[in-house]
Image 1 (cartoon, one colour):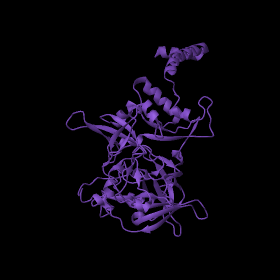
Image 2 (cartoon, one colour):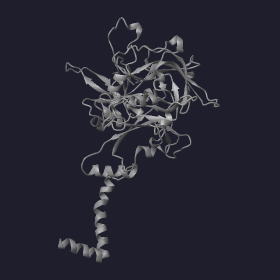
Image 3 (cartoon, rainbow, N blue to C red):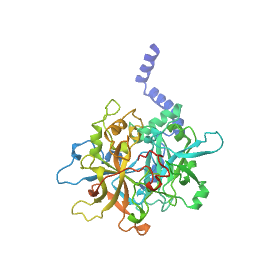
Image 4 (cartoon, rainbow, N blue to C red):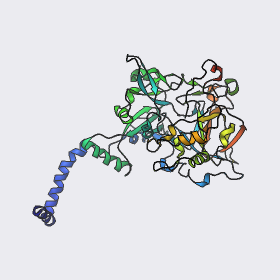
Length: 458
């Protein structure tokens, strides 16, 4: 104690001693900060020089008022689009948009990638298969963030010149051990705020690569199982950092697949036929149909029926992973829609977008995962959905929430004409109503595969 007091007295009376102590600390600390810079340069810093990030910033989300009474139906006022989402990597965190391009597979850039795990054969030999992973098996996928970076013609780089490539920047929570962990934690909080955690990131090309790029980068096509389908997609396993498998808790090899635009999956079952639409509906790594529609007031009604506890009080619409989230409609009004149009507000001459409402969304337990934390609730909202939303005779003992859509294009003769636009604020106009009966498989194959049911959820 006497030594401590003496030291303090010396420091207080001698500016030179204070200076010497400061120099000593800097000399010891400087090598650490040279080896481990507190705020390392991130890929997003480089991308900002030539690209712009797609989507709405999280703090400006159009769902920030989702629990407000302002979304209740109002007499004489149509329902509107409240929010739009894409999920470039299946089951990972989504990207919220204010405007989206509609193509035959749904919203552009939606579910074009999927993580997959190698599943060894039960016999233990070399045979096995790739199987797509979702939040059902790996709830921590909810914490894998995805940013879409598109070339910006207004930005130029002297060193790189014009850049045409688009990218996905993928980030997930990760830190090293020891001193590195403290430095990474400090860097995260200095660069992204006090709530930030250290993250690992990697980059993926957004567009499907050319044959030359595939050869030079070592990408190969492989079969990957998703529900009852096994499409050939592009295996880009080499782009994944090994830490991602550790973070998710994957036991076997982990890969990321990019759907090949020439090998997309055709949709039958409840979807309209080709002679009606002018094209056969197709999907990438979607579960079953191109788009998923949700009604905020339906979610609020379901919320009133869940058994609340300390870990679940409200139902965030993002639990249900919809593409189109509407506001101002009566709860469950969407249940009997057969076709729907989204159009500009009155007096706005913007074009409309039409959709076939193919079926209801039969739910599994995926919405039990909190999209903000990746923590799975033991019962809700699955319990409430099964108890209160058994509404489709084609899906007995299953609950339904939301609707599955297929795009309808006015000029669907040529593939380049199959495109439309959706924007937040568009009015919702149901064009036709009728009953729905969920088909687990194509009715044409019903007799051949009777009783073979596959659980489908968005």
